Amino acid sequence: MAVPKRRQSKSRQKMRRGASRWRAPIFKNCPECSSKVPSHIACPSCGYYRDRQVIDVEAL
Image 1 (spheres, rainbow, N blue to C red):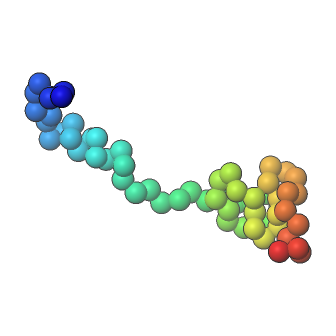
Image 2: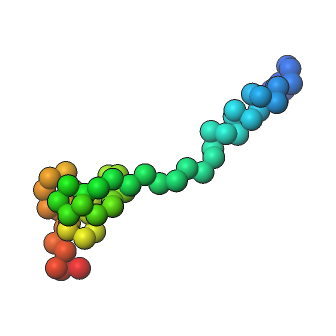
Image 3: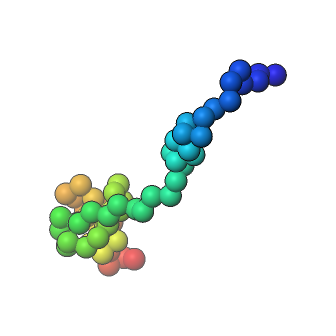
């Protein structure tokens, strides 16, 4: 079994654990209706994604 040769410093340990920290989701404005939408998601209020309508909102 592999065993570390040297102990990791406190700084390196914190850097490793800092990579998995929680980050707030980033929202962007929909170009059609200006509502807040997460990235790579079709807008739930108008149904547009990348300048074309992909969801029929009235059917939902």
